[in-house]
Image (spheres, rainbow, N blue to C red):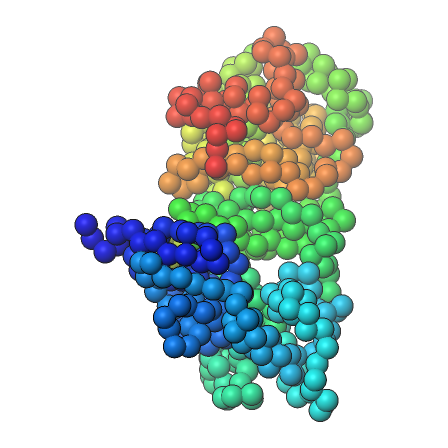
Amino acid sequence: MSDAAKQITLTIDGVEVSVEAGTTVLQAAEHAGVVVPHYCYHPGIPSRPAQCRMCLVEIEGQPKLQPSCVFPAGDGMVVHTTSETAETARKSVIEFLLLNHPLDCPICDAAGQCMLQDYAFETGQLRSRYAEAKMVLGRDRVAEDILYFGDRCIVCTRCVRFMEDIAGDNALVVAQRGHKAYIDTFPGRDLDHAFRGNIVDVCPVGALVHEDFVFKARAWDMDSAPGICPGCSTGCNIEVNVKENQVVRTKPRLNPDVNSYWMCDHGRRSLVMSNRGVRAEAPLVRQGGELEPASWNEALAWIAGELGDSNGMAVVSAGASNEALFYTRGLLDRIGIKGGTFQVEQGGEETLTGFPKLKLRADRAPNVAGAELHDFKRADGLPDVPDGATLVVLGDALSNAPADYGANAGFFLYVGSHLDPAAGNATAILPAATIPETDGTFVNFEGRVQRFHRALRSPGVARPAWMFLSRLLEQLGGEPGVREIGDAFAAMATGTARMEAMSWAGLG
């Protein structure tokens, strides 16, 4: 049996746990459900300098306390994380960290999710014995969009080690030594890496902050929902943070098979920008040459009466969910429109050296594979619309269209969230929820089906496209419409060969 597969058993705070040989004491404690305070250790960063000394534990037979983040677990080892000696050492570390740390928790953007705040409260160190004036380091800009608050920094070096070990970029360094140490860019170097935003995520305190998040929200102000980044075809798993029905921040969510703990800066901006522009908030149908508001029942009945067998065309978005694409395909088949196209914005690729599977990919859309799965074809531009033809458009496909696009169509159905200039030529507009306003799935570049969840309320009476398109199909003589995402996914899985063994509840 290899060392990597060999199992060892140790006892941590009275809890017996079996782990693989080579596991550190801190990792073994996590397996046992024992929390060992730490700062410099991060599970996604390979280098472990053991310099914060917060994770010191007492190990029977050892002459002194050991840093659990680097000390290998041994068979038969007995570990005490809450002994008087270990807790005294931990309190000393916190006291030293708080010597010059400003007590500005009420205005700090990390308040409520700060590890220093948590541990200081847990140990009861809410007052300092230090009477002298604190050393002030001030604020600096380490990147175009990242601020560094030197006073708050505990020099855990997570940020520096992320850039070196994972990003493969040594632009970030520790300047000076001892109590004067601080984080800075190397002279003559710019921190311009495409994944630099992750240094904010790994910071255990409020020293590194995205400039567009400063003073916007606190942890207790925000609601969160699990999502999938729409920035490219990688499909990074993310956490969407929302305040007052606006996306204020996106953070990576751990998925070892897709993006680990990381995401790119392009992806961070994608959802924050999703609600910009003029939104479609109610169904509109063209009456007497003008688009007039209508109820959902009126609009769907009117469209069903106007849509007949057609040799028209369709344009969809590779940013639409699989469920919306499935029901769009069903509608097109019902009215006799074959094919359909989509465009994909292209950009440069950026790789994360320490996690080579994770890339900012050239296809700047999350569901290219899903659009192809539903028989839509990639195109270099918008197709020409023959005079009098039926045109069906789904999603943001009109965002870069000429203002007169579709004006010559016989019947133009626009299913979308934003009223782009060309949408004004539509015969009927059905207001769709944006990706953060609905539940659904994407298929990433490797064929992995992943689900995302609703984080925002839709404006007006906008609804998920799969919901009202299924009702429109019902009006045209199809199956009953669906109101729940599980039912929509089940209908899609039944009608899609590559998904027939899948269920909404069974997706990771």
